[in-house]
Image (tube, rainbow, N blue to C red; front, side):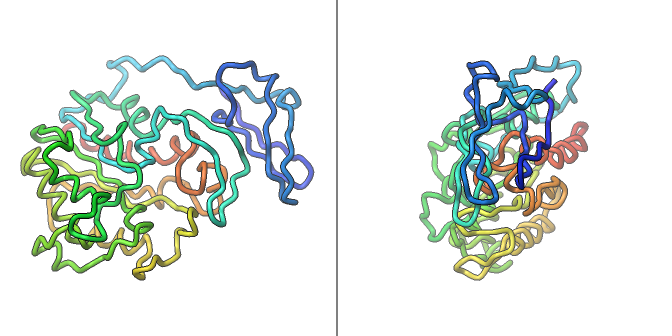
Length: 309
């Protein structure tokens, strides 16, 4: 069993976790961990000095289907880079004002893996390059913005499945905030004005999902986690005068006009805060494996209520 340790070294509180950015093939005693201290110095600490930490590639035996929650509906995981990073190597790096205390890489055990360890879906689809849309926002900066999911939704070769009565996840708004997508108004949603505003993009995406999965489709959507990346933070305004909370409110407002929409409040209920971002992310935005185990909990809680739907 992997242990966690808070180890006091001088004036630095060092968090060591099972996702430590170390090669997966060598023995633990051969490693050293590079830490950025509060004095701004990078110091390497041999792991042999830390007896209670076990390093692991986190390979686990899959849970048998009988131990999982049986779901009646298929699922389509539609998400950004934090979803895409599942089972891929992710690098720790500084970004803007954010400074990570770790260096190196780790292999992500993300949303899709963790959810399928709890739920047994009849089928699972993960559209997008390598299982997600890294850098894509829901809305666009123009009607033809190629980095808008609402635009991708209209492309004939996007690989999105046609599955009746499925569950679809939607998790993109941290990129709408970062890409400075204009918010628009509720009228853009009602009048289906297209992807050049966030409200219009929500409508265009939802219309396409209903086309693929029918009017009985279930949408499980989320707000954005806390962030401090590229100088875009949890509370700052972007260049179009919007905060993360503005996009959250817009998405909730659109959802209120429909049935079968379920809200995942990962921002408030995951336990991820502005203060602990260095411990749970690789760069102030993308989760490390401790972050994933926290952020997935609100998703599990909502999906659990849909088992009999």
